[in-house]
Image (cartoon, rainbow, N blue to C red; front, side, top):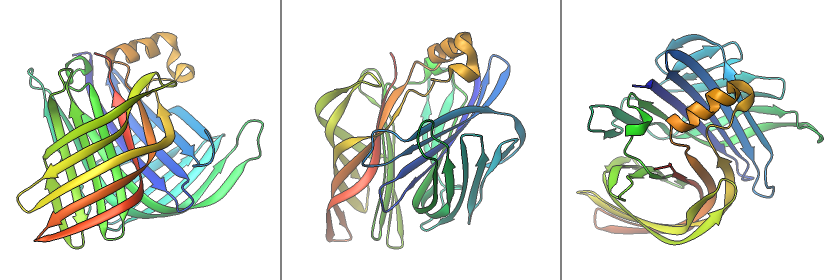
Length: 319
C-alpha cells in the first residue's frame, strides 16, 4: 500500500465583509516518509486572489486533534480551539468557540473499499465564533494586517486506503450558517456516478439531525481554468430522514479559492510532487461564493429561506 495514512484538519472563517480564510493541516505517510504540511488561502469577495501559502512543517508533537510544529500549533478541544502560525510571509492567530454542538465524538461519513480500507470524514465544529488577527506580507503590495472576526467551521479526514482504491470521483461539500440554522454536507460519487458516501449534519434550534439519504442534481456545467475542470453552475440537493425533509438549491456566484492540492514544487521537489500527484489522482476543486434557497419540513412545519450567502465546493479526481 503506497500511502499508509492520510489525515487532514480543515478550518475556515467567513467574515461579515465576506473575507474568506481557509487553513489546511495535512499529515501524510508516503513510502515510509512522514510529511506534515500547512496550506493557507485568503480571499476577498471583490478581488480575484489575495494570498496563498503552502509549506512543509517540522512536526514536534501530536496528541489527538492537537498538533505542535516549529511554526505553530493547532488545538481542537470540546469547548474551544486555537490556531497559531508564524511564517515570514504570514502570521495568524485564531481563537474559536463552538456555537452549535461539537462533532468531535459524533458519527462521520465512512467510505470503504473492496480491500478493507476506510476513509472517514467528520465535522469537528459545525459553527464557531472566531476572533483573532492576521498579517500578510504581499509581494509588490502593501502588507495586510487586520483583525479577524466571523463564523468558522472545522472538519477532519482520516484515510488508511491507497488513493488508487478510494471510490470517489466527484465531491460536493458545503457549510451554511443562517440564523438558527447551521448545516454542512459531504456528498461523494464514484466513477459510475453512484453514491460512495453521503452525510449532512443540520443543527436547527436545539435539534441536531443527520441525513445519509441524500441526492444531488446538477443543472448546467461551466469550464473553469484554472484549475481545468467543469463545475455545475447550480445544483439541487435533497435530504430525507425519519423526522425531516430538506431541499437546498445552490447557485454559484464566483470562485473564492481554486485548489490543485498538490502544487508545492518548492517544498516537495519535482519528483516527489509528480509522484504525490499521481498517487492521489490529481484532485482539482473550487470553493465558491454561493447563494442558496432552502426549504425544510420538520415536525409538521415548513421553513423557507432564500438568498442565503454561504461557501460550497466541487472537487473532481482523475479516474
